[in-house]
Length: 132
Image (cartoon, rainbow, N blue to C red; front, top):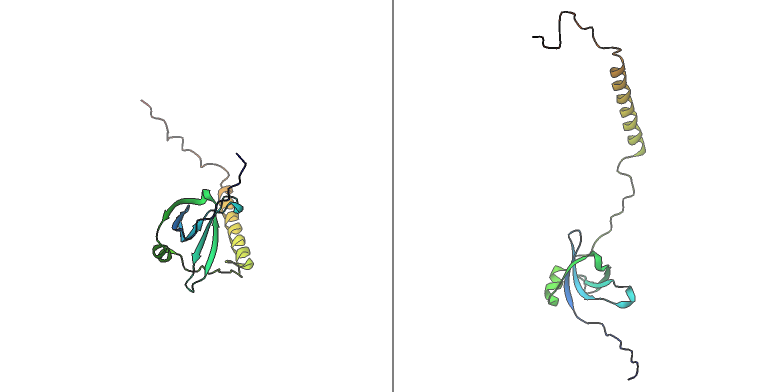
């Protein structure tokens, strides 16, 4: 017997809904290419007829449901827009003002706690222990 190398051909037109950990989901044409180190490849159809390719680690996948092309296209997520946040949620000045207010509040609470030097005098006639 000769050593023969078998080349596995990728499965074409295998459609699936892929459920991801963290309640994510995608759908499209799937295959597991060996050159990507065990990552599952999902070609997600876009509304304009093109595809965008996404790769997922096998450990990130919860389940794969093989379905028809029509069902996969219906479940395919719409194009995800990237939102850029150019400005911070809180400006530096707002943050510094909040820190200043909190420090003042802490100083006030410390002052209140330390102004009492001692407990009030106990009235000699009052006993905290029950006597029988």
